[in-house]
Image 1 (spheres, rainbow, N blue to C red):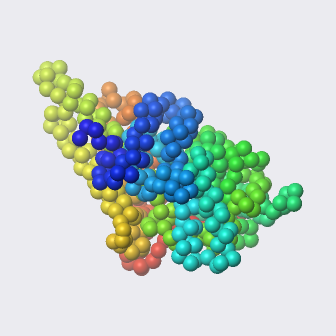
Image 2: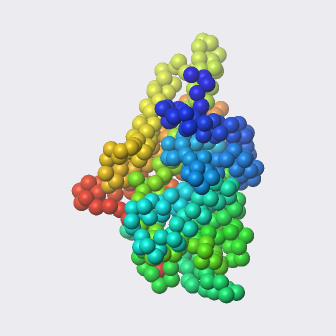
Image 3: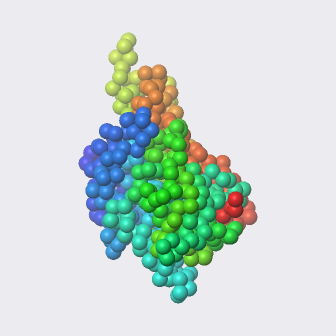
Length: 428
């Protein structure tokens, strides 16, 4: 089994086409792994990775072939972020968020096919959706900026960034003002995909999408993020001050955002589970290194491997259970969101995701804690695999929503049969 691709450790029944796409991912892993420690230490995304992934065709991994992409789906993305996560979680996270941009193309097209748009709106919606997909397939790195620091009691992501109509040199467009507190590839991506609310609206129906060039006037990066985990993902966010975007670079059809989200299979963008694959890949990586360390290093007095001591056996058993539990949750969610025909209604798939995300991340983090305990002080270096994994995997406990919120929302869905709103529009 030595010739198996790393992505196959998660998706073990790949088709021939999936194997071809996974091989492209496998080919870039050595470069990702070689740069991981320096990226973490410097807190910077390795600039060369953009060209590396572009040249491999991976920026179009989940874009249909008809738009120039590789034609992959959620299984491909999960396998890719898992494999990248085993090499450099920061790069895997940034790559994941680039690929979430594809949902802004795929879901509107699905909404059109489902008859959710009026005939008059279809050409505008289709043009924007296809523009997103063709750019990704053509090698444009998109940074998906939705999250903001503003909080809402009724939704996970609240949008206060505003867009108001404006004409420049006779061309209709929009002026965008706001602050995005989190978004990978800040200052790295070619284009920022920004979610904003149309001025004068106060519901999710007023949310819209805008393609903002990185170097556009009025766009600035926020101060560098000196955080715990994923330090090389360039996720410090941006500010926008009256940034003008032409109407052709925007999707502002009323209700379009809500309609497209109705077409996702499970999580709100249809591929959110691939973010947890990053954490499981990282957990697998630190598990493998810990096992190698403990089985090759011996006690000075007995000559027996350290891994054979009763204490280490208990810790290894716990780590193994944690890792397998994370796999079980992730694979179940992947099955729910990719099976054809669907094996569960959307509300059940979504409820399962609220539970799965937290359980996957908690178990992945527990693997890193076990590795830390088993390796002792000799492994407790800040920028070694152990130290990076502890910090990187801790991010899963808070990113998007913590496990406690997911369980609370799942309980609410069970007892009140209600859905949770992911996005809210919050006037300033």
